[in-house]
Length: 416
Image 1 (spheres, helix red, strand yellow):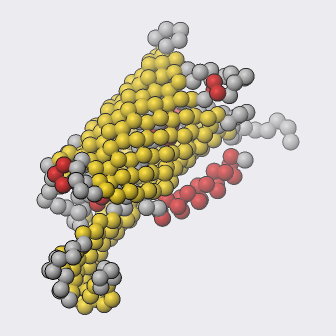
Image 2 (cartoon, one colour):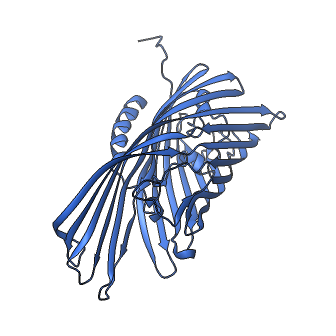
Image 3 (cartoon, one colour):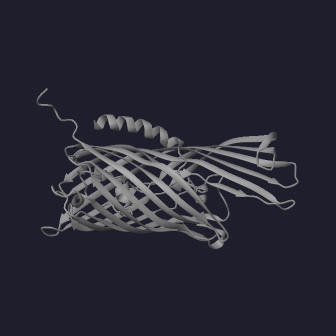
């Protein structure tokens, strides 16, 4: 049954990932857009902490985790995002529903194999400036698209408590931006259309280690490093003089100029270090630190003098609690309760202000009776950006759901 579910969902969600508008953030104008992928629902419910060698959940942060799986595992997740965007004088609300990830993990003795698809970043802003004054300037800016990652991972269990892994990621995507401007009382306005086709490869390496401290307590650790990756961008730009009406609709193109060119971008390197302590299948408390280089993601259409990039950092603290994972009499006691807090410096600097992101998360893992599969729910609330320096502050609430389906494959039948 799980094979049919995986085949159907892989086809459906792979197609859906290219059509979705995954963000409403004005900060998605910069670089390759708003980086949306933050891990699985289980991980995000603990603010990104994922340090335990889990046997029934896929770890998409560290490729070393695939060799710890005991059963063939399929995971998929999505999010409903409510955002309030505000500045010093006004506020707007936006909502998005997105597909977040799809992955399969295959255990093969000491070897683990994984592959999947991740919509990594999204561009999805709509900004309008309308003036009622004589000779007042009017503008509207739109953006859509983003970057996707398809990955293949290998992991090897060197010892019962130590595993190594690596994956290769193929990055691909398409970004479109539109800039429309006209001045009241002037017959002609301008229309600028930019398109960028992105592609490139990067690599990620990881290790996971755990040790017993006493009969109950375990120490968990996780280390991963993603190398810088080249991202080629094939760009086209069309600039036109057009006639606009009062609704910003253009009826006639007076003249246009088109150019095509290429640019090489650099995806940042990323180091993740996590440690934790706990009792397996009972509770865990962990912390994780992430550091990323600034890379070089500014393209020709979004390079601005008031914008720069810096090293990004993230601090996470989270964990889980299970009252009694193997209780036969109480379903409630088998529920996994998760929570976490985070603080992040995103690496984007606008008007000399570093854009920061802080929040907390909660989650539940509901086991599917009679199986090792589970349904996971997550909630995140946080704030990104600031109203200082003429910027936008985003207050967001995210409701996520993820499926982790487990089955045993490659077992020869003894009876027909």
